[in-house]
Image (tube, rainbow, N blue to C red; front, side):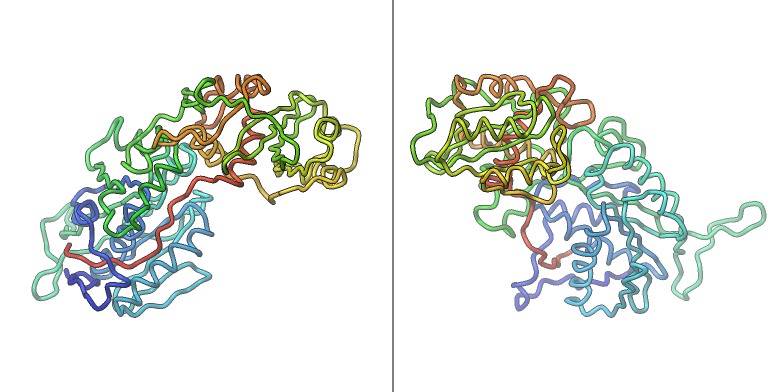
Length: 450
């Protein structure tokens, strides 16, 4: 069997190709039935998956299935990436956008499916399968997807002799048995806590399950020079092992903001005349919260809090009373676009606009973990920089929440103790202005010896 992709590096195409890294090569050469490419950001996970998919089509008559967490990721990332790889290597193909199938001329089909609804993984057979970002979906859904994919992964691809005939290895119940190539299901993910991939591949692996780790450093020569340094600036230290080294990290039970220190993160800063105020706001009847920030040397300082406001009307009244004459920018919970305070038909967002505030509203809230990690990284990043300060005397309740809020058993911040409202409020502002830098290093096609 020969690879569809040229094995030799072409210097003339250096602007769109990179060499395979050692972890990528080891994974592509794997003989395991269930290999896992456990990858840090920028380690070439998408490239490794794309090349593996195309190579699997080199087997005669093989159909290959590829899975992404959502249809958007299929359409916006996976399909364009595969088309680029096929085009750059001059491999003829046709895309059926409605059926989500790429047919490769003189070979087989790439069947593309979403993991949104595991119940729809039916009606086809594949020789090999590739699952992207398996750990980004809920553990119970990931288990269901895995079982459904294995059930689809039963197409037989027969080995043949020099004359093109199937290789007979024996009989069973009077029927001939022919030698087949190994069916395989490969998974690719950045670790997201102790979830499905940890349980299946590390905690209690069965025969055929093997982890191939790829750190960001393994692909550093293909990344911008400051890429790793940017990750260390953007993320809190507890996540560097996951997002750079590709290691499983416990995100259950520990503190959400473990590096917050009321001494090291303290500031005596207060609101000064002429300050612009940046207010993160969370809406809850009788528990409305707002954290008021100012900028000092370009970084945020929490200098006041609104604690357990009865409703949005009370939050507005407090801000107008305390800070008349200041420009006030509100960074609210996006749910305020739809919900109303008690005994009113106006939405919370409409009320903020009517009060004369500058409202920096979004159509949806950021992913919960991204919001938490953004705030945590500003409190203290992997380089030890504390870029977020809190006047702990003016914000005593917020300080307690930062010290005491923990991760729940569902892998999300615990809400049972009522410690979530003020960090949520602050997080809406911090995420908007100082977000974490998610993986984004382009989609260059790779070649190499494998």
